[in-house]
Length: 124
Image (tube, rainbow, N blue to C red; front, side, top):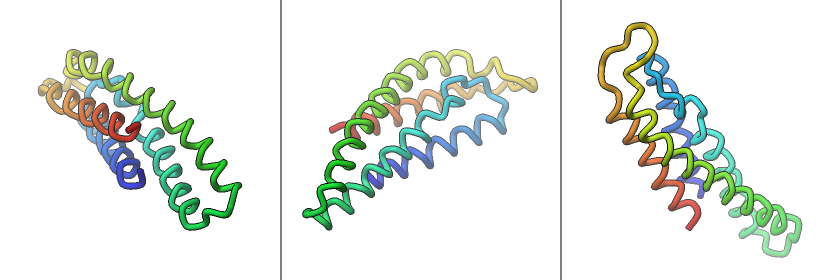
C-alpha cells in the first residue's frame, strides 16, 4: 500500500504540474484524485505496518480497520473518476487555455488508465 500510494501521489502531482504548464484543459486531472487518494492509501499502509509490528496494540488495529474502510471508498472514487476522466479529458484537453494546440489526449488517457489500474490493485 505504501508503494502504490506513493506512486499515485507522484503521478498525480506530475500530471497536475505537466498539464498546468502546457495549459491543457484536463478537468479531471485538476481534481487531483490520485494525490488525495494516494495520501489516504499511504497513511493506511504506514498504519498497517505499525499495526503489524505491534500486534498487541488494539488501538492500532482498530485505526487500521477504519482507515482500510476509508481507503476502499477513496480508491473506488479514484477508479470511477479515472473511468469517466479518460474519455472526457481525452476528448477535450486540446481545447485548452493560452492557445494550446498540441494533442495531449494520449497522455491524459494513459494517466487515467494507469490510475484506474492502480486503484483496482489497491482494492485487491
